[in-house]
Length: 277
Image (cartoon, rainbow, N blue to C red; front, side, top):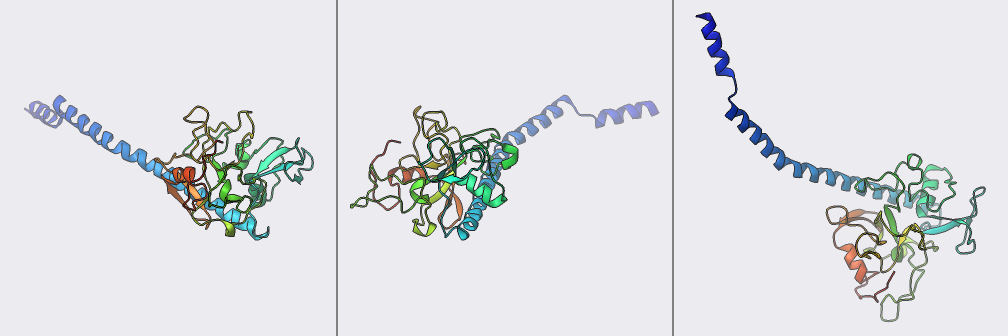
């Protein structure tokens, strides 16, 4: 009698095959519903981290300006060699190593000279452990050598180094100078100082102006020679938008700004001449 009761109890508490399949189906359905939300949450977290990184760069810029007559660091400058690394005005030192704003900011923030005999070593993450990925975006996910994840927008950054035509249009011969140290108080508030850049830019392939640290007029949405991926432009890698740091040092995401800049380089309301980078 006791044995029969024990068997009945075990049988009543066990799952049937149908019940097991139902449970598996429910779990699979829940996973299929939750996975997109989890993926979106991860991307949102990366976007938020990127915005925080841009704000950190803004803080470093403000500190740099306080000790440099309110001037921004030049987007491009040159050092003389592997021993002294004294800055030289461009282009008076044609055989020198080319640095940019990221190298100057790193030296200023960490009080440590860069001293790397390669062009744009901080921006390109030449020594990743040393730079602590200071100028890299997590969405790209590449901790190796890159072409630079953040680049300055030169028409804003080098404000005052070019002339607008009489009709208010940005002309073919009015490119800003990357060697000029602009000032934020001369920049239109709507213009970005810097933003997410294409990490696969063809700048850096040895075809001239390699690994540049800036995006010039006409390049904000330039698709590149392959018509798709390798242009020196802002990158819409955060759910179809790019993150930008603006003149007042606030950072935000925009899905339209790079398209607007491609038509109106200084956002003065006048469509500009089409410039081929």
